[in-house]
Amino acid sequence: MLEVSHNRPREDAAVIAVKGRMMLGENSQPFEAAVSKLVEEGCLHLMFDLSGLMQIDSTGIGRFIAAYRQVTAVGGSLKMCGAGHTVRAAFRVTRLDTVFPFFTTVEEAGA
Image 1 (cartoon, rainbow, N blue to C red):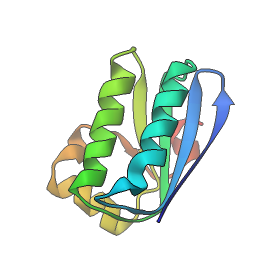
Image 2: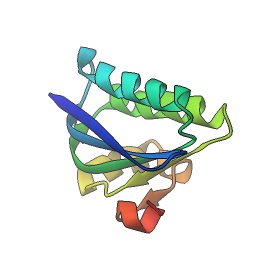
Image 3: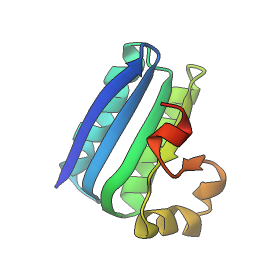
């Protein structure tokens, strides 16, 4: 099960907490809906708190690629925060750790 919540430290920014497992299937729908809604509301800078994300597969990584495309298309930015070893390794294997900026904490990312 995937849990997605967010807060807005600034009008143009949001911290999206992702908890659980981001895998193939419909459980990623709340993630996609949250990103789309926030971008539509003018959030140009998204920070993903991944400290509660336990597992991710290629479908989950694809969701972050889609979010990246969506936010950069409107001139925004995307930051990854607090990824555990397993999640970070998935991004490293795909070499997406060179595309997405990773930070130890949300605070370090500038929230």
